[in-house]
Image (cartoon, rainbow, N blue to C red; front, side, top):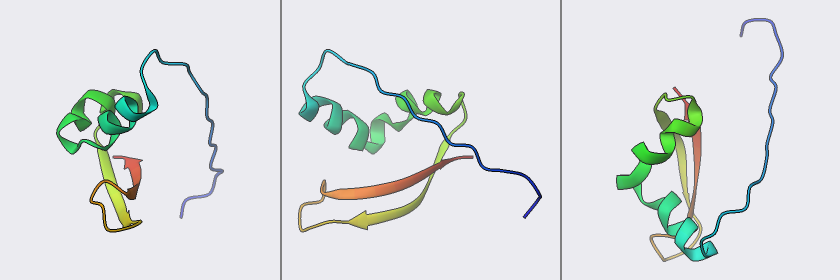
Length: 66
């Protein structure tokens, strides 16, 4: 690994939509291109997909900017 530091930052925003609608938007892979802009316009790459139950939508994805 090259020398340096890893810096991570987070923020929160209020959106005028229901939590379920926002969750459905973020988990729909067909809409991924619409929220890839959050990574400065570059595509996101799924590093891991972890199922959290029987339901297909009950999962966690680890993403990174390419």
